[in-house]
Length: 295
Length: 291
Image 1 (cartoon, each protein chain N blue to C red):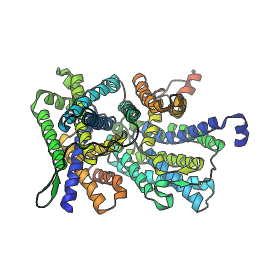
Image 2 (image 1 turned 90 degrees about the vertical axis):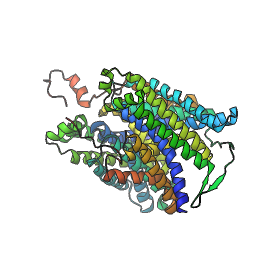
Image 3 (image 1 turned 120 degrees about the vertical axis):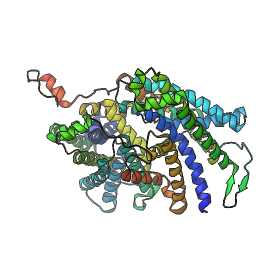
Image 4 (image 1 turned 180 degrees about the vertical axis):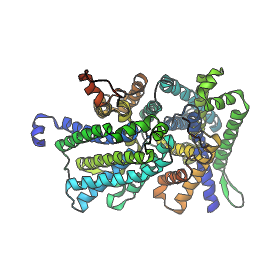
């Protein structure tokens, strides 16, 4: 299928499309933690690196099949997400942000000293099993499940925690349990994205998952509109394309990227799509339906 | 060995504390993690370098010059990137804007100076004094004295002057302060200026001490200083000082007695442990949530 596509699409564009897909999976995971549940996480790249290294080592050194190692990487990241989610029982706001930053930095330093992961040199020779079709099939599954999840009782509870934690708690929502759950789901997707990334890039090293990567992912979620799936898709697409588009300005690329973030935030402070959800878009086409509680 | 490491730790810690003060003051007033603060520190180090090597001035004048430059830079950043967002956006949008400024400033410096490390020129003779238990170099002495002087000065300003009173009022309740006739915008601008000046002083002294400056030095220093501010209890000025010094000392001891390859992880590991035991930081006050 990929070789079929390669006949019609330039490999360079195909590559960008794959990267958009991988970033989407990562950003949708972060969206559940930060966008939907409102828990500021600035260490998503840490979960990504856990997924990437776990799956890469499993498939290279233990000969695990591709999908099994992807799943194992995602589960490993979810386990760490669960463990890191436990401090959220007591921490909030920017204290939590700091813990997530610290966690990602510790993970990075760990991999820098991790013998089986090739230390600072990184791992190379990971089988390149990730293809365009696999990535986008997974993206579609993730989007559909994500949209479904957010419309369930649990999804609404996530939004309630973001809007007002005390009110949510007094409505009988077990906020701590749900916050840990949000962290676990988000980091599962982070690990999945990391595994896909490792098996696409063929080569990974700890610096690929540094603080800037976490920030890049956070930008994608906030830029599009917090907690909105269409917003996250738009934000991810724009911010993955931006560095490619800005290649014309060569070394001034990051200068423009930084300025772009500031300008976008000044003119669209609540993100490009604000809080629009897939449900809202569908509703627009079905005007007859009785206006009920907005969910 | 122990006392020497302690001294090294105090020196490093006092520079962390200087940077952390800027984070904590800005956070105390507008609840923004000013991610561009590390870059202001980096600019301070470079302006100091420029003044020493190109203009050829005395190191103390260079220090003052860097502080003055960064004061203006800090106020400019606030005016361009944060003020338009204030009041009409979530705190996260302001955070993204801060990240944008941070990327912009570090890239700007990389374009001006290249990404390589630049060495500070020999600006003064370094003497070593023997104090019985330890040997202290004149450079360490200067760093400790200047930091102590700046911190005491800041504390005096915040506690004794009218503008300090206005800053404290704003950190308690921005809206109420506005209603009481305080020019809130000016106070915020002033806070950025002071915080940036302290970071610049830290930058020049770190440049001197480690004899190296590079455009991306602000990132890790900023993260660690933010960690120090959170460790001390974010929003609290004495907390930032204590947090900075604690972090510096622990980091140096960690490198000396454990392993240098885990240097960057030590500060964060300590932070996470402290926060799990004491979620509001060392000096922070527990704020009960109101409905």
